[in-house]
Image (spheres, rainbow, N blue to C red):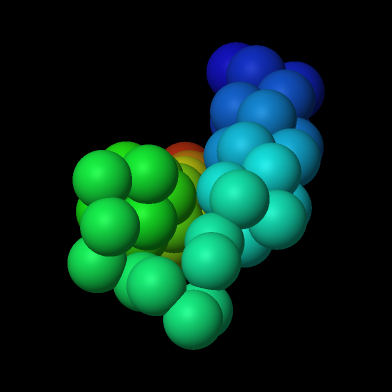
Length: 67
C-alpha cells in the first residue's frame, strides 16, 4: 500500500509539471489556459490528499506497534 501511494504521488507530480508547462500566463483565461489551471489545481489537491494519507498511515502504524 505504501508503494502505491508513492507511485500516485509521482504521477501527480509529473502531471503537475506538465500542466504548469501548458500554462499561458499572458492569456490565462483562454480555453486552453482554463484547462491547464484546472489541471494544476487538481494535481495540487491530489498531492495534498496523498500526503495526508501518508501521514495518517504513519500514525496508524505507530499506534498499532505501541500495543
